[in-house]
Length: 416
Image (cartoon, rainbow, N blue to C red; front, side, top):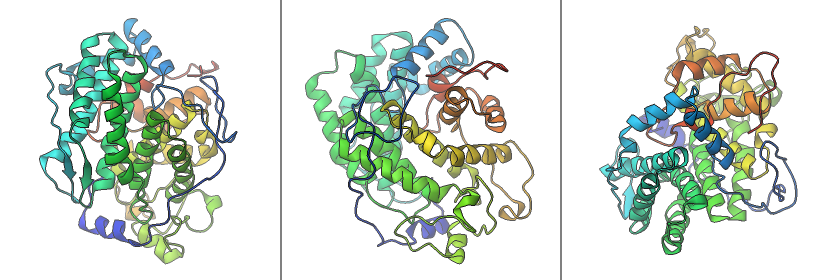
């Protein structure tokens, strides 16, 4: 997601168009809904369930059982995780009080922050799967080191940096706080304060004219943090931001002759949309705003969208269903070309950068296993790239947490 000069110009398009933060919005789910079911709209307040930032007890217990039984793809994913440097019990934390990240560069603290968050999440996952309390202690040690000093993000990439690391911190904290009794109340309170003051302001900033992976990653972080903090207002805001941003990033023919522009940007004419979409002027179901930039950034957007929908699902809100047609089309469209299908001349001049990372496990698990949809290209790509590791940004170990074997023909997929 680090930007080139041309992409930076695109991101800056519309600077000064920052809108007021969303207030209120459509009503959300209030009552606890059993795992495997969610609803789009219900009473105003969510009854938060923990852990509930992307991963849940159901997913964690499933992974634990499958690894214990030596089942695939979980066992291979677990073994790959164990071999990662993030899994070392000697992993040192590298906390900083300010993390200043300009576009395309930055000090070591930018890399350290993202990697330390992934390390904390790695150890939280390991503790859930193998029960070794040393991993829970390591996760706490890393989180405590950062919460003792971290104050703010700075420079042009602050929102994206805070999104990448903040979403991962929240996932780690959710797992540990839900079940590990030895993370002290004082330290938990301090970690919550860090997320509230050093991350939320950055990820709630409105940047609608930037490339869309920004706001989707930022919303992923804001929603995950809102669950850990049990912040109703930020959760509602995140739901509304998802509802606006996904239709402005992934196209469906029913949107009209050209894609929807991000709200409050003035990107609303065919020429403006074409420029914003990296000079792509022909639109088919599933194509994305950054398809002609590269598939890596589309993968980021797909992963962030799935994280948001998965977190909302665990809290009883079905964003997957609301945007199901759009997201399924985007998954299949991009998986097909990442697998190597030749791009026609009308698509990005026949040239695609096929650089998608380990980004599709969460979405595939929902649409195939819970909803029973057929996503053959997505399934092929996921199986080709397993076990999914980490992009060293905000996606980590999703074959272990959300991987499934393909459903047998004629067999209903389990909820989970």
